[in-house]
Image (cartoon, rainbow, N blue to C red; front, top):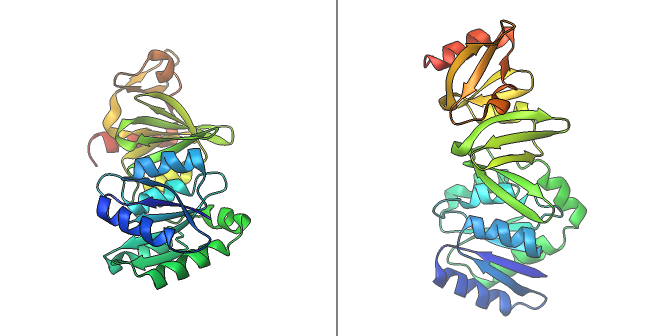
Length: 247
């Protein structure tokens, strides 16, 4: 079984690499110093198990786990941390195991064996409902074998696009496999303007009338072609105006 080790502290990674190397049936697939590197490595090299530190700067372990669960044939995730109060969040992120630091070989070996017993189909089923409660700082777009993390602060709006959702952001447009309803519930900084679109409130420059008398959202630094899609349905006009006033 190939194991990816993720920790922002080099001594901790070295310790885990040594422990994994001493356990029969497991090999170190690689190491990552942060969540972004872990997501990129997993999408590219498909490790079987990820040993994942929870408390890391930037993309923390809980959010990283959420994004790892988006990979096709996701890895089993075993959290490692010095802070046992993270246990509930860890299992909401569908971790297979949870090991407290300082990591003991016996506990690590037990967690690895537990992860190894799960079939890929079981992991995929578990990953389909990640259940992370804290608000993410990114959404994850998948294209072929590549995962792209899009910062929430860079997103102008989400728009339903057949069975996917199109994310219009500072870097362009990406597709994600999430529902508008779940995005609306998670990200309060977005407002629904019609059945098929959510717009970042702080990206709205103004509202204006179209030639046929409808209300349209105008996004800062967004091309006119994109703006044409952002017509506000009548039932949502009052709420959009209220949110723009800070209500």
